[in-house]
Amino acid sequence: MFKKIFRASFLLTSLVLLFAVLLSAIVLSIDFDHTEMSALASQADLAASGVNTSGKKYIKNLKGENYRITWINSKGKVLYDNEENPKKMGNHSRREEVAEAMKKGTGTSERYSTTLSTVTMYYAERLNDGGVIRIAITRNSFWRILVRFLSPLLLIMLLSVLVSWFLAKTISQTIVKPLNEMDLDKPLESNAYDEIKPLLTRLDSQNKQIADQMEQLHHREKELKTVTDAMLEGLILIDLDDQILLSNPAVVSLLGLHDTDPLPDDVKEIIDKNSRLAHAEGIVERNGRNIQISASPITSRKILKGTSILVVDVTEEYHEEQVRREFTANVSHELKTPLQSIMGSAELLENHLVKEEDRDSFYKKIHESSAQLLTLIDDIIRLSHLDENQRFEEIKLNLKSPVTEALEALQSSADRHGVKLETNLSDTMILANFRLVYEIAYNLIDNSIRYNKEKGKTKITVKEHRGQAILQVADTGIGIPQEAQNRIFERFYRVDKSHSRKTGGTGLGLSIVKHAVQQCHGTIRLESELGKGSTFTVIFPTLPAGADDNSK
Image (cartoon, rainbow, N blue to C red; front, side, top):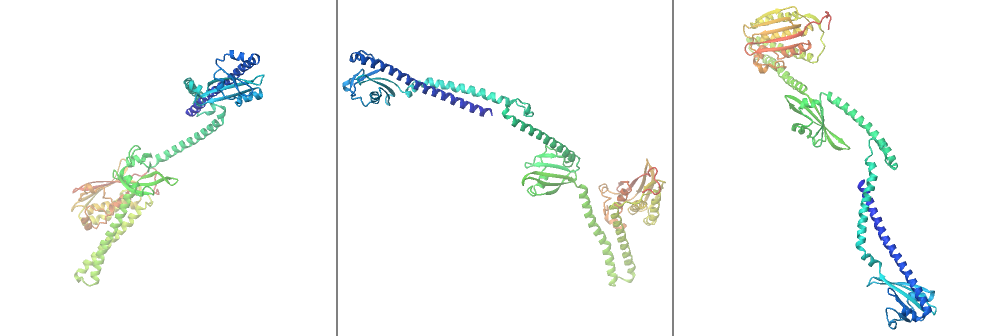
């Protein structure tokens, strides 16, 4: 603004001063012409008076040092000229100033010499006898005078320009100073020009509107930060250059990514799947966890502005899906084995390809395979019920009771396998579902018998320790390798598959135990050494104070 005002003021002042100088020169020139013409008129009056009185004698004695004096008779013949020979001069009756003087009494004219750049001014006055006295003077033309005084004029113009520059700067600073000192945050408090009061009022109104909008934006920003900080999922907003504009704390824990870090290449690969113009998803791995990346474009008026990325830990879901797939495959395989055995034996019997003395063994094989199939189906159904997280009736019971019942049911199996069962059962009250506790004890004791050594032993302990009810099953069996202990509770997982087939296990027993323990709000712990045996410890919460027999 200052530059515009300065340029305008400087240009205007310079033009005004230049115009004033030129106008002054022109006015002075015109005034000089009037002065010269007045002087010529005075000299002509004087000469005419002298000639009218004394005639030729007067004019010869007249000295016109600066003027040219010419005496012309009434017929236009030159009688006298102080600069030229009258005889050589032509008739002057048609000269403008002479003709005008003869007619009107006085006459004037000017004649310009292009060659000499001079102007000759003539003044003629009629005499009493009808003749004319003409006085003339020659001077330089206006343009010649202007050229002659060019240097002083240029100096004057330069000084004028400097004065214009100074005045323009002073005026501009004076105009702009109140505007520069104006407080735009409080425009109505400024002592500025009255002409801009409407603008200041509008500015004050807009300031209030902007302040309200900024307050709303800060409020929404705080709300957004509160929501995003509380999210378990990670949220990332990036621009077209992959610079992180916003991220929440969950991103750091899930991806180890901070705002100043570059976007990882595996994440870029996912969001670039559809040229960032459509939704894209993928899985990346971080510290053994499966992290799902969901990217969606951010557009404004159909123009891509950036990408929003949702980061979710799907390790559990991914694992559960993998377990479900494995479970489906394993169920198919486990069901297929006894069914093939039953079908094969039945087909041989049907086609009379079995000797009479061998028929009993085939019938026995069909019976065993059918029993194994039923046991497998029962275990699958039981596990499905446990998976559904159904609520089971909980009663006050003595942990010793379902354990004792399980021992009685498995005593014959222990005798058959040559395994000695040792017990140390104390009265310990818990709040749980009897059937679930029975299944926990049954499966643990059954496994300790099946996977024990010949003439081995299993010790079953029930006790209360530090406010917790403990069921412990320790055997002297084959043990479990360290690398398999983390997977032993998975469905259909067997450490030694050939041994499992021989013992008739379904591979679901420990998985049922795990789910049943969770339903009883307990925990299970395994300690095992290969070749020496395994110890399973189940910890139940003791009976809460004030619980009765009908507690659920």
